Structures are given as structure tokens and as C-alpha cells.
Amino acid sequence: MKDVKKDSNESYFNFNEVFRYYFRKKDRSKGLSINLKLMHGINKISIIMFIIALFVIIYRYVSRSFF
Image 1 (cartoon, one colour):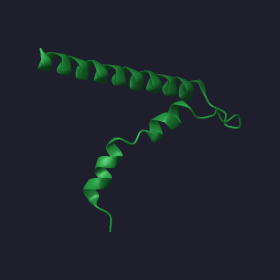
Image 2 (cartoon, rainbow, N blue to C red):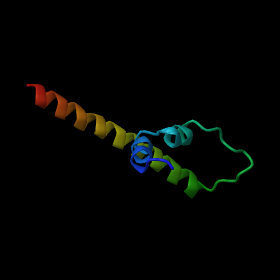
Image 3 (cartoon, one colour):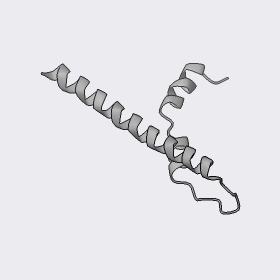
């Protein structure tokens, strides 16, 4: 039986889904509507903005704690 705490900790740092979302090949057989393309574009922009904001928060916390 697997340890539940260990699995939950590993899942926080598993970024495979994020990398797969950004770097996958386009499937040409699927016909995507303009609404779906815009939705995916907005999702990518929001994920990038979240990661940048997270780095800014961590940088501010680290810089203020040492000075």
C-alpha cells in the first residue's frame, strides 16, 4: 500500500501536465473552432502570468527576510 502523504507531496511538484500542455504537437485531424483556440491561448497566458507572479512573491519574501 502506498503512503498517501508521499503521493500528495510528489503531486505538488509534478509539472508533466504543464509541460505537455505547452509543448505538445498539434493534431491536424481535429478541427478546432476559433473559440477553442482563444480559450487555450488565454489559458496559456494566465498560467504564464501566475508563474511570473509566484516568482515575484518568492523574490520579495526572500529579499525582505534577509535585509
